[in-house]
Length: 465
Image (cartoon, rainbow, N blue to C red):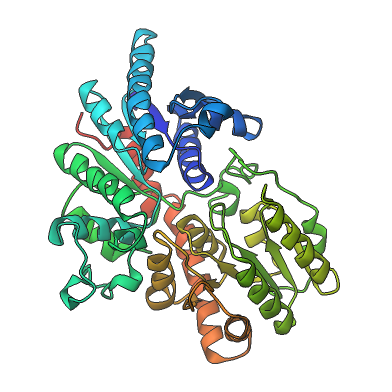
């Protein structure tokens, strides 16, 4: 095997760190050298929970806001991203030079979403690069089609403006990543970055795209992408203990930005199998007071035990609302926690349904654990994920928003009864959820699609170098 050195860089967001750090662990277990890097402040926040593994080390790069004070005065998103590009590019170049001078040259620079400038740095340094897509393959296929066939323009009034991926349902505006739509506030900020990602990959035909999925789950999207560029499915990127069990101690991604409360495990142990509703909307979604009230009443009226994650907040009004909800829940069969070990919760025998924001990490984790979903998409790629869960994979139900409320109490109660009840649709959803778990396990076993793909990456780096 060639002596590879993978440098993996990620933004310090939980949804970015989890899959990229798991990829770093998987590559290191394969016997290669891996350096995982994020921003200076980001590494400071997660350093106490970082995994210790032979061959895996850590580094930092600057985003121009290395302390709390500079971040407060860092301006808006556009300003931050401009600083990140300017300072981060310079820092990344210095890191690559440093490893070269130390006799440990980087043989592949792996970068993730919102960091397209990393590809240019790698090209200037004559280092092969790979983009790791932390969204599903279908979403990445939509980006490619959107910027090539639609020229990055979406017209709600033109039926032909729906994005078409062969052998998949069409994707009209309601099913697209919402920042692709011109009326979305993030459209002018994110679209140029995503366009640059596609352009960089098309500019460098030797670059590779790592997909956090597996062939059996997204065969149609992967086949579409294979005709356009070099892609390879190396997912699901989840801790080994919940999938291939090659490392039974690997029960956490590591790199936790939030403090986990583990008092809930005794409570879960006391509940019947498949009886508990797990509710979590990830690390970014901020729910309105009205939405929280609707969810609370929907859960209580369902008369099913529930574990609900509501993140702590510096906002006094939000914290007060959380206390009100906790007082209400104390009289019912439910608990509220500030954060949890999601994979351990989803794999617990008591969990029967996951009410989710439909982020890709959460969606993939539920598929790996065989847990049915009720998707309540808020932004970004979440609507696309929820559509795939309901219409293609058949492992859950997608809620439809009513104004600012993503799911109303009666709708939540109805969907919980469908997913967890004795009706035929619920049984079919549960069968599908277990089917995808079985296929995910097969994919990572010796000889499986993901196993073989990762072996190729380790042996050849998968790059034309």
